[in-house]
Amino acid sequence: MPTIITTAYRPTAAAAAEAERIAEELDIRFIIRNKRSVEKMHEDEQADILVASKERLEFYPMGKTEPFFFHPNSAAFRTKRPLEKDPLIEVSGLAPGDSFLDCTLGMASDAITVSQYIGSSGNIVGCESNPNIAFILKTGLSRYDAMPHLTEAMRRVQVVSSEAVDYLKTLDDDVFDVVYMDPMFTEEIKEASNFTPVRSSANMGQLTDEWMRQAKRVANKAVVLKAHFRSQDFEKFGFERRVRPNTKFHYGVINLN
Image 1: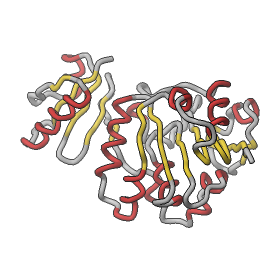
Image 2: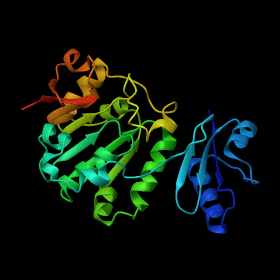
Image 3: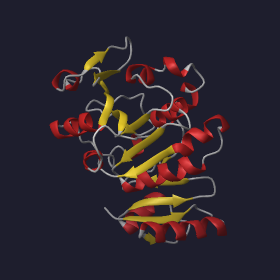
Image 4: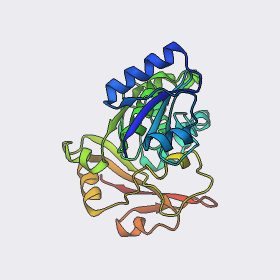
């Protein structure tokens, strides 16, 4: 599916200029809005749509009228609690200054939370296979400023637009302390609604033997999985399941040393 970029319904000159700049950067077409609805533009252009507005960048996959846009999401409240007690940080065995690879960046809330904990001496990279989502995340992480306590943590997250396995194959052995994966659940969790607008565009790929082989090669301390509590991946790939009572997802860990 091709992607185009346009402006908000009544664009400012600055927003129009930004849309044209993004079109050039992403090598996609800039289409004048002409006061059309997103639904009408989908019909006319037969394309996914990026919308550059004054406040933010939005993504409307074909057939969707609710946008995907960047927001720190659960990191906003997780980082106000003792971070050493955060379930992901606890199961990962992370320490300040560690390096962390998020193979499935999603809304980037896990990456932001980890970035806040490992600090400026740490290193954090996130993979997103959909280039439109990756661009929105990269832009949002570099510009979002409505939560000052998270600004530095967000700026430290490096976004890589790539399939996770492809990126892992480019890396040397033991270069990240923790490699983390949170594949799209095979059973949708209704409460996890923030990603709903792009669910059809997101990578639905599940764990494979090759993904696991590469993750264990690249990780130095641990490989961590987050999955639906009914998932068989924990047992299939040898994770030690950490049961979280009364939640719909669990974590699993493979400690490497």
